[in-house]
Image 1 (cartoon, rainbow, N blue to C red):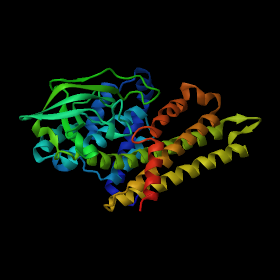
Image 2: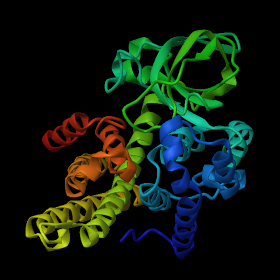
Image 3: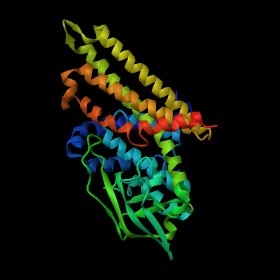
Image 4: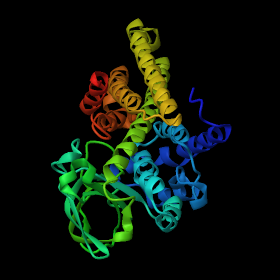
Length: 380
């Protein structure tokens, strides 16, 4: 059990679950086919307060801790993945930097509008030559008077097409390597800044992903987030927490898939008996459950570490690696159990199959997690 979740947060989870069943699930096929979240649903999400889940109460949010955020993510894992990502990205890595490093003036300017959902946020780190290796970043920020001039590009930026506030990483001192990376708050209408077209993706439909371009982009000096050189440090802290929330969502997705399989196995007949009576499928279902439970245990261990104030790098990477790999196996089994129906869009299982593939790539790929885990084990 996630022991850090209060009764109030559990009540909120129940409320969110009802909202997802009533408002999001019936629109899931529309989201999938149109590759966009309906305006009406975005409005309902704002009214529900979903955009302010992790923003402190004094700025209009709910002030959820990491544990509370993960509890919500488990519920989000049971609904449309694109919708869950729009909300999860905004309430996670896209607001974490401003909450952690923002000046009081920055918080007062941005957080209330982000909490209400009037302004959507996004986190901008990845570049064509610097995905899992921030040290290869090329976007530069040069201070000129009361402004920084940014030049460079970012790719695969989640929520880019609907975002108003961009937390952008750029190099302010190349001689310092990763310690020379700083963070900036960039507004959509800043001169020299542009957002590209929404990329067509394998899954995660409904959540936009687009490239960004900075051409002599003028950013006021007061939009530096924290001091110079703090960008990479904050990015790593943000990604550590983000990996745990991804793990939590994977657990919710596995819950949903297992429940779907149980329901289907009880009614589908094959060879004169219900699928639930076939021992081979029972074993498959049992393995799915064990993988889900193990993933949840590792996720909660990581939550415990971070909530105690520990660095939690190892725990977060282990949870992210195992949970995402486990989800891949569970969703593959879900398709197999449903047979031909699992391959058809009508059942929605194949949609989850495509959505699930991204979790082994973003927020640090499985290979990167193995590098982190191995490096920490070998460290003196």
